[in-house]
Amino acid sequence: MTAFFIFSAKYLFVLPIVILAIYFFMQPRREWMRMAILAIASAVLAYIVAKLCGMVYYDPRPFVVDNFTPLIAHAADNGFPSDHALLVSVVAMIGTIWEKKLGMWLWIIAITVGIARVYVGVHHTTDVVGSAVIAIAATVTVHYVIKRHLQNRQKLPPPNL
Image (tube, rainbow, N blue to C red; front, side, top):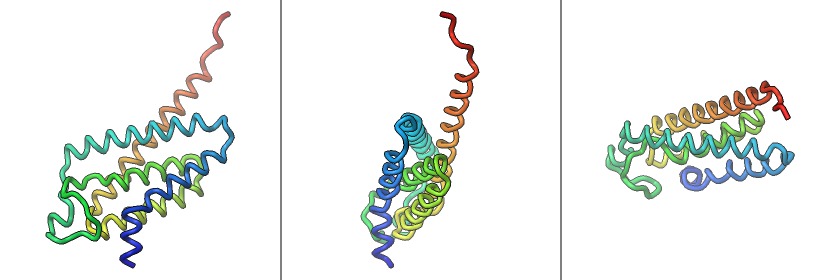
């Protein structure tokens, strides 16, 4: 069981990216630009917000606080927020917006990564949950802004030529 958590904490974050990429390329080309904009903008916004939150809130890693050796090597820096959990949560949220069933499977993987990061001793639960909240908020915000922008573009009268 420990090997599963070590693998999940270190490498499982790649799987949702691969799954979403496969889903992306299975879509009609006309959807690619919208999906790419949502993905890139959500990831960038989530990363910026996470870095700002990390500057405001410092949470020493569990192995530093409780003085033990974690199951995977890691720097003894700020644990909040979890970069791994942030990435898989953004991917899961993007998947959820495009296809609910896909999103459900991506969230299962994201939750597994988060639990594994806590289990191996490199994050507290708050680091992982905080990352998920940031990812959800950023992706929903970007989705809302894109949706509003597209609605406003459709309401504009055609240009006079």
